[in-house]
Image (tube, rainbow, N blue to C red; front, side, top):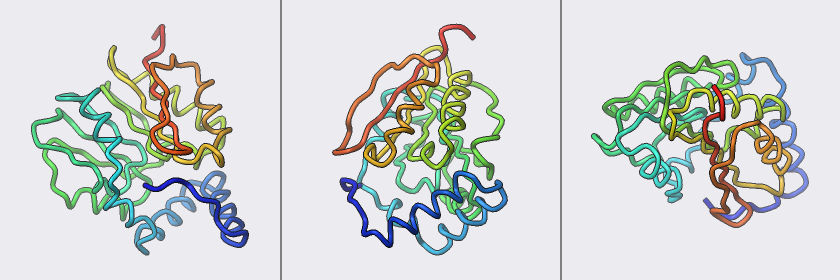
Length: 204
């Protein structure tokens, strides 16, 4: 990843329109849009990303444990070593992205095509990843999703919310902080980017 840059006006208008559809359109419309972007290669640059933060979080919080990756994409930028985790579970609204993820043939992995907003999380996880996901949701829905993830953590587990552009998505970060879960840690991992780590709720 590189530091976020302000795009030209015309591109900002297009991005705003697309972002609005991704936030507010029905799930079937959002699925088609995301799938068309993956099929067209819009997100291929992520597959070769040198960002090692997700892998660092996996090593720290889910070494030998269970990982849930909501809005996982193709997962090709994750370096998951066989035997280093008990389960990797990826969920994404795009069938194309999930097909590519399944094609990697990782052991101890499962994948679902689903809208993360309504996806029923079962079981408990040591690490739940929300990598550049919640700013595609309305603010209240973003906060509810983070809060709901907390109910599916193990006692020492964390929800990792990664936001790359706090200039553009500062309100989303603020909404996540107000979700009701305790903040275990918060740190800047790149210029303009923040990672928020939430623990399980104080009472279940």
